[in-house]
Image (cartoon, rainbow, N blue to C red):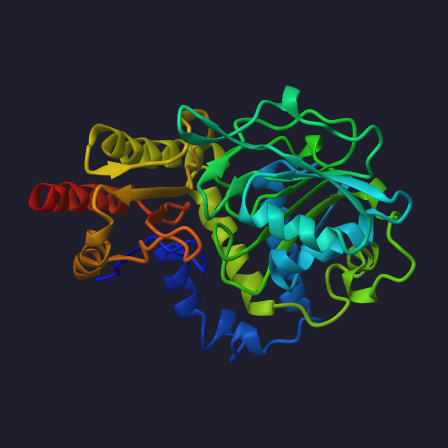
Length: 359
């Protein structure tokens, strides 16, 4: 049997997608070769790439005046690519700091311009939260405002989209396709694929076309969004297999009823897990209610000395990758789109049994 995988990334993929990829591994559509052996310039592969983009546009309702780029280097490369592409005509950008990933992004951006850091992390009644926007000190005319909607490590999520007078740039690596989004409110959205899209090796960038001419003159060509848009994300050989697998995930999502339907399932999964944690004196979640992630659920045990036993016994029960990030410790269950409700039910059952035996 397949175990339930709660890894934060590379994360669970839908079983149906893996089975289809397995069936097509040696002979894609009767062509006598694997798609990973196929030229990215071939008509067959270009059709796969175009369908993946079309399906993503349908899922996210992406307006026509946005380019969709399928790039490499992970979201971490975009930490540099974004200021190089968007700071060309202005020197200042605002970065909202709420956790480890937003900090990594702003530190890279500081190499290229004047970065105004907005410290938005706070505590409400002892729990981590995001401060009200009325307390932020935004710049008058920044090139853009950057934030991370969902901090994977901390399990901290924005309750809504910030209202700003500049292009809004968002790292959605941990939450893309998990809930409906109004793409038109953003100048740029980016996301590493290995959480809710597909395998590691691919990064999505959705960028409003009026921002494509803002790049610095000395930007490396392969990082230039306008060049990638002009060349259909094929300035060099792309991550062809990851692109193909992501396309299969988009097809799977459409079959599930799209983003609205998967969002309802995600709310049910998160509600079940948070509901159990909140009802228990043995487990604790450190995030304020309004800022809880529905994708990444951190929790601690009443006795931290039991963590090793918890993880060992969880694995014996086919519940994998529940250790928290090394920087914060504790536990973390990442319940992305591909994690079924049955997996969360099995986790809650195990947690309850463990608490009764050790509490």
